[in-house]
Image (tube, rainbow, N blue to C red; front, top):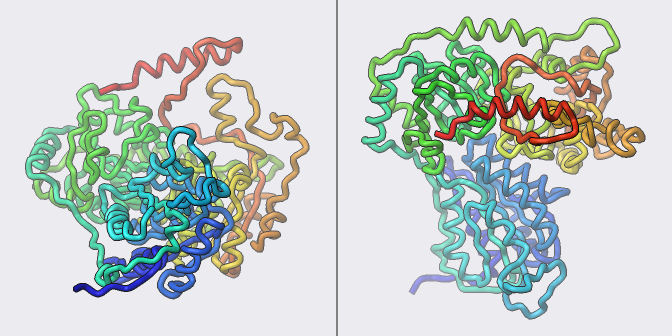
Length: 610
């Protein structure tokens, strides 16, 4: 008869989690972010306390942002490790839904454990319970279902015997990877069960490297051999699969240029001869010109989202073929692509062998040289004058002070587009952009997560004033824990990026910049003082020169360092980029909107459905 141990369900969960290991014999779950409430403090809280040496618990200030920190941690470590996040039921749980969406879009593992209602329904309705008038099985946690890769509701202690292995299988599967939600009924957390001792034996989760199917490999190799001007589009999967060296070797062996998505940026050093740089809506001319005429587009680890494809108007060659090397079947077959389902590293290695000595003509250097002639002046320090600095000049200041160990990170607003175009990423992992969900509020918490993942890195977070206002609470967490990173707040008094889009669609400036919002003229936020009040070291600078001087001191500061600078909300980098499908009204009283719709209709004709 097998041996058993009597534990509460919450205790069993923590013991199981502590026994799940990576190939490097590290715990796969590096710790748990927790905000306790009545739905998780008694059961999960007690279990976490008992397991605090094996599963460290970190206290956050907001459920969404502490989940963002956990997700950034995993992203920076290429999905090798993950974190758990727990909340009470109710608003604490729903706060995490946004973060679950972010993790789902970016294919990143995180274990979300919100408390749930009583399985026995004795005290129903409990505080914070949402009652479905037609379905007694529904709770607020059902909101997690569309944004979870695996969802389960734990209504009996023994259900952990199947739910937990499924959860870890999902988080460690390269094709199915994403957020897992285990909604944990609060009475069940405290219920005891005789668990098999064998359930808690250490288990190593090995990273699976899927080899390509021989038939798919042969067909893709034949298509590439017949190409005249192929191009590679490198996505985030290149990083997740640790395939940057394989990409470089493959591109060099066959002389195929590489374009980088937001998630794929830094796959090759910016100055590598075959790196065309950013592609798509926020891309540059070298990548977009080559992609427009390419007859074979080899996507590697990319979802082909609309910012990459120019809403499927970028790949304009009428004879073009799309090949998708992706570990996920869902992504490998998008838009009629020829699939090559495989791990990015193994897939590139075996495709390279199948191509043998094949090499393609072409030299991207003239395109790159012309591009940098156009955009390098945009990042130079301004001369004398009273004009507000631009976001491009801010990027230039940070770039000039960056080192080999610097990680530039961002998520939403103006900066993602400018950084994609202008930031010169020197090595893999030096550019951390969450642009799949483009979630405002990821930045500060994400910077903290990156620093926790790689404490030796110099983490610099770019954020606008709008994003700062949405989610800044983990600044206090970082100060409390002594986690050091730099935040550059560009204050353009509102949502400058969307204001420009509004104007580009013919709309009047309305409700985006504070000056165009009701009462906005009364807004006078001192971001430096606010950050200081939460425990950060902070300073407001008046020029690019002062910004560089402040940045030069960041190595001497412990904890978060916030630098605030006022910027001009209107300029953006004009060279590069391609069309983006944003619906413009067909009729309007504004002549500007009607003109914008005519231009929209013209561009819409270039969009390809095949």
